[in-house]
Amino acid sequence: MAGIYVHIPFCKSKCRYCDFTSFPDKLGFAESYMTCVYREMLMRSAELKDYVFDTLYIGGGTPSVIDESYIAMLVAAAKKYFRMTSDAEITIEMNPGSVSAQKLELYKKCGINRFSVGLQSAIDSLLRDLGRSHTLNQFVASAKLLKGENFNVDVMIGLKGQTLDDISKTIEVASAFGASHISMYALTPEDGTPIYTDYLNGELPDGDEVAEMYAFGVKKLKETGFERYEVSNFCKNGKKSRHNMNYWRRGEYIGFGVSASSCIKNVRFTNTFNLDEYFKCILGNCFPVVDREEIDLQGQKEETVMLALRTSDGLNVSDFNSKFSADFLKDYAAALQKNANYLDVSESNVRIKDEYLFVQNTIICDFFE
Ligand code: SF4
Picture 1 (tube, rainbow, N blue to C red):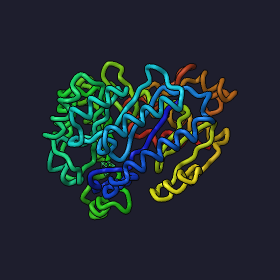
Picture 2: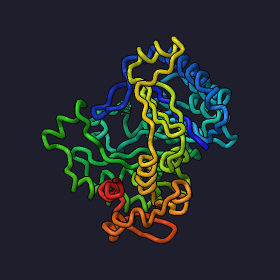
Picture 3: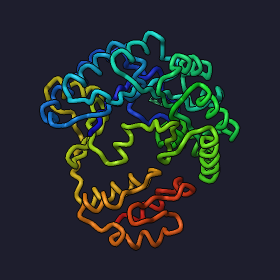
Picture 4: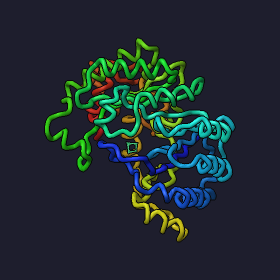
């Protein structure tokens, strides 16, 4: 099974921390853009005819800002050009304030069965500081429309002036309005974004404070009934994101649209980040790929370990051994021994202990040669 990702690079405005490929002033290009995306799908369909896809993830940007008819045509194009399972997980990202009952109706009718809402915080002053274009009330209105649906809520920590109470309230609001999944992740102040100045001025919480927020959030999520299955991802009733699970299992995926990445047959390639170049390539019948890397055996092993150790399930030793003709426990004995206090190791499985998942990057480095 493999996944499909489609990038919709339009937003209502630019958030202060945003480093994603999104163009707040180019919504007028939505129709041309989507036409190119459908065409890019058609161009890739022949080489992927033997693949079966069980997820489609429509991300951005803010996919819900464009007309819902383009989204319906996108889902139809994916089903037409690729073999998709009848129970495929089809997710769309949306921002509070850009969702209407009419939009949701069409989304569901065309087969979308999972939603991801960018709440980030339930505190309006924090939302304003992030440059988000919505308020808590708008989230509440969107969440009411999503009642009974399978939906994720994004929650940010590490914000300027954010308290543990703020995090608690945000998780409570998401849970109370029926979220089945929460992604909780720390703000990364990227160089070149306005929020980077706050970071340089020392206005953002430091590493220890963020670690405390994370530990608090994990505890609160657990109390609220969310089970952690990956460093930043929590769900109720086993409602994991199938699309993301495919990434963490190092499955194959194909991406469409500007800046979308793919990994097929151990070749990773990324589309241009430039909208004009994307249009030119597609209209000229060329793939808009600007970066292509073949992943050698060592790279495949490292990625498999790195991704698996991010998850609560950890690494399945026999799967690894049979896939790479390896002896994991022997080959990685030094790293396993060095990190013995942080790991649960058995003959069949290696996982990072729950309390150390937040520092998984440091542990994982020891598994790289
Ligand atoms: S909504 Fe998301 S993609 Fe759009 S500007 Fe804000 S952070 Fe960036």
